[in-house]
Length: 117
Length: 109
Image (cartoon, rainbow over the protein chains, first blue to last red):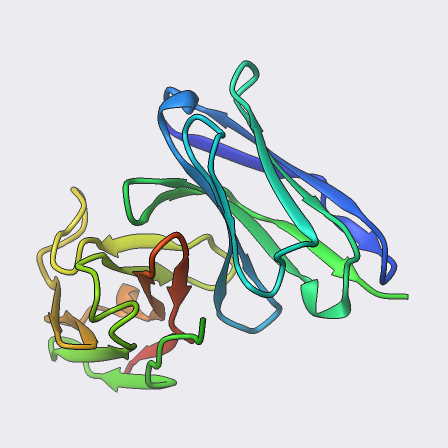
């Protein structure tokens, strides 16, 4: 069974940093591209960032480009999202998702990030 | 990348059919056959119900179907059941990025 378990969320002040983690199990992590998708309270889904299976290619949504960095540790089956220069509008539940070519096949339960003073 | 356009809400009675539209551009929906649909119940993670425009993952009832014409994709749910009440999101690949729709709340009357 595919399991994705996010952690690292919490309360952070505007301008601060946070690193999210996603522990993956139940599949060969190094074979799959992964993404982060977020959902602001009461709002819709927004794709944030993706990383190829090898980790050699990364991509970002326009609202986070230059502030967020995605990475992966395939030795330990962990996906990361380093978030810098956080803003109030980054407040959201952040999901990690296992890609299946061009869609998101499995999702974690999410971790809440709140940016507030 | 602008969000895909979905109706905010749709409704139907048990046993009826509803269709949710998802309009994008030639850079996303119209440019790729990689539209997926996600069902999200309150407080839960999204679940894929349609991928690659028309394909259903195993375990998803055949009451769920997808289609696309030009820059608009559609999700049809037939034989509505109470458990179908949820938020539905379309998503399209857009060349090294993905774009979601704003979401549609389905109410089963």
